[in-house]
Image: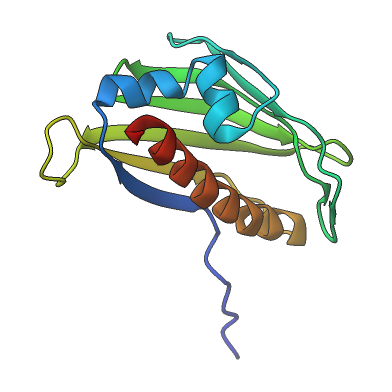
Length: 162
């Protein structure tokens, strides 16, 4: 008998330090103008309260991914835990691409803590995303969002530090 090995379920686990107070970082995840600046969303309905919606929309990309099709679309879920200035947890989240079937359900968590940066008011931003069903589309989704979150957090850092 041979043992089958499975690749671990993919997910997103990314962190960065931003030289800005936690409340300011937290607000950037909920205000439309900030979301447009750092995450390049075209629209958002984000209500920072228990059971509030967390919905962000990007315009469809011109380029097509071989597996996922055009990128962009809508990410939507419900906030099931929130500590203003510290963390929020979005459950029952789905990505609705411009074409093709939704991917989900999944969960998104953002946790803000004091960072090890020497300046006062610096924040460690930790983003995790979980949810998986064994398929090529799910695996490709996590590959794509890893790159997207790397860029987005660098953009958030640039926005809040300058």
